[in-house]
Image (cartoon, rainbow, N blue to C red; front, side, top):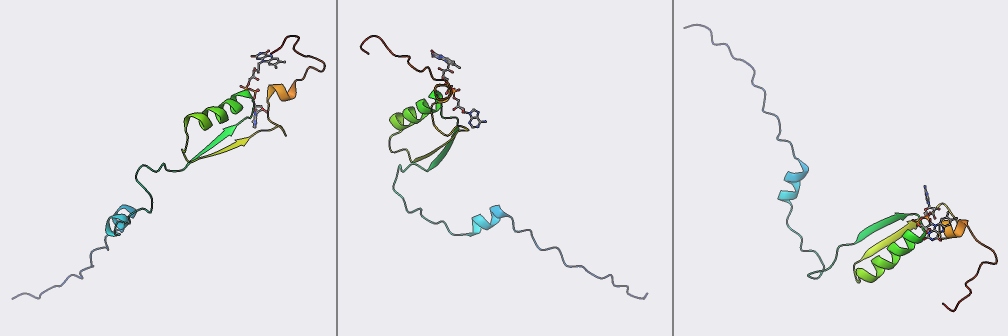
Length: 97
Ligand SMILES: Cc1cc2nc3c(=O)[nH]c(=O)nc-3n(C[C@H](O)[C@H](O)[C@H](O)COP(=O)(O)OP(=O)(O)OC[C@H]3O[C@@H](n4cnc5c(N)ncnc54)[C@H](O)[C@@H]3O)c2cc1C
């Protein structure tokens, strides 16, 4: 019989624990909320001119109880956009409106 030659055996690599696998292994947690509750939505609007004012109005009116966190940013210190930047001193309406 010839001499027996053994080759070193390297252990197989540990299986990678992916985020998906971790989630599968974790027990399901029942959310502490009621059926039909709307998930919170964060809305950011750049510009608080007439379009921004309209968005605030429309979102407020059409999405009641919608759990919306609405945040406006504007380069001006006040809202109004064009109508903040341009004023017409003395200009007025000459009819009842
Ligand atoms: C002199 C003038 C007269 C006009 N007259 C009439 C009229 O008689 N009737 C009419 O219907 N329309 C008129 N217009 C058009 C007018 O632009 C629109 O009526 C209306 O104001 C447009 O609204 P808006 O919100 O879309 O834009 P804007 O009113 O321009 O609002 C845009 C907002 O975005 C902000 N913004 C812009 N860039 C940034 C940034 N990078 N970061 C943060 N904030 C930013 C601005 O500060 C502004 O508040 C007139 C326009 C001008 C300039």
